[in-house]
Image (cartoon, rainbow, N blue to C red):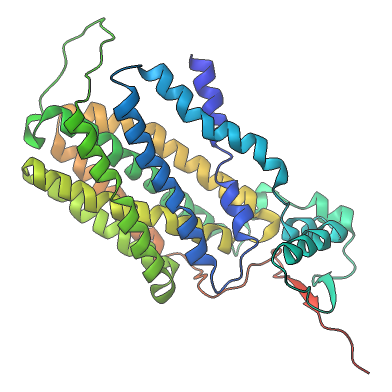
Length: 366
């Protein structure tokens, strides 16, 4: 069971690369909105999982729930063979023929003509394709003088995002099980060998669904503010609002207010998470975009690993300390967001650390 669970986690680690692939096909003018909008399907999947659990868990148990939940991944595994490779990635590896074939296929599918001209890599012409291939995806490129601060700040932001997002998810079920916020603290369970878990009621599932639906307004808000405010300010603002409503959980609210506070907190942390998915592929060049997003995702996984010790273990000791930790971490993430040295709003994607781009050159007119 533990080995299989580890393999699941290993597989999920590749999920963020879908955003990298998608972003590399998008024009800069609509990239932010398109990346955030595609993340709506994450929210749809989350809501669907709650509804599936409501139907399956009481009658069939968790094994059937797990089996049904794996079906979409099986469908994707069979369908991914039709996914095109990124033209930017192929150009960065010196495979211009494959890049051109991909763009021609896209133009044909959209009934659009290819632009006139020749597809070229606008970097130094003396660079050999084998050297381009050898230099792609190097970890040390994340720590060049121009990218070092950005990388460290993004690691903080991604850690805080996953730590807080999954923390509020776990807090929701923990607080609903306890009935009221102030009754959680001090409930230190006696040592026991029992593996029995508390069963969520239908009301708990309905309340969980309401808080899960919060992701939709969070995503919609992000769509509207990410271009006017910019990526950095959007992330910072949403982290601060999440912190505020996390601190409000300490006020011993009624169940109705608790649902509202969690609803707003989850909306804004979800929006901040998606803003990160917009910013990170934009700030790294094609040669290190995948490894940059991959290392950020790894930091997010560390946050997800740590958060149960706060949301489930520390909560039994002090709800105030628990909420303070989540609020404090997101305040730190907000500061890191504002301190990011690069704003990617309206910025073309770079192809390498020497700021090259993939261009379609117009024909020479004599």
